[in-house]
Image (cartoon, rainbow over all chains, first blue to last red; front, side):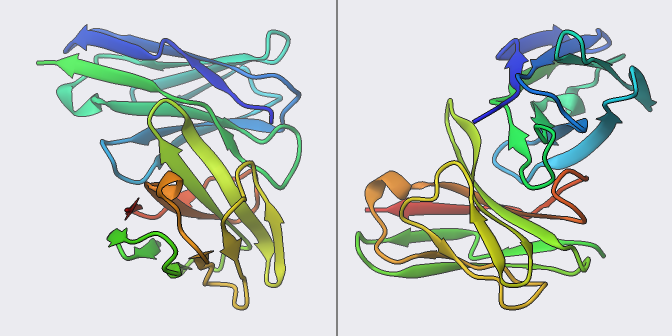
Length: 111
Length: 112
């Protein structure tokens, strides 16, 4: 079924650097969400961007959405070791019934 | 505190022995769902429910059953577990299917 795909699969950076993760999807959407997962634990919602929005900010997070390219990016500025986690995008595929997740980007921030 | 509670957190069982993983939410959410997470495959949806007595299959429903008799509870039932159902399971709830989802802490299931 339709699914978001994150890129890269893994990313390793130094503390203080910015981290950018990308998500591509296949069909039209109502919104796109980003989630974070610390190792083996439940996912935590970070941000939701609607299809009529192009950019959204939340603290050190910046999300962009390009519906013409069916892609989104998540930027974490001034990263910290505590940002080490897996990050997932999730799309609704234009329907109200299903939230479909990608395979995630594993971010490692070294102190 | 708004939360989704899954039990048990860890479970080791034998092939064929029926088990139930419970999920409960205290946010009066309409929508609940179950996912399994496997290395390299991400999260795959097993079943979802848009309201009481309304359930539907996700991407990987084979070998699983669910029920939604009450709004707050959405148990996952494995009638005859097999080793390929060894996985990390998550329950989630949301106000609607495409709004912010709240996840439980996960259930790590091993079937031997």
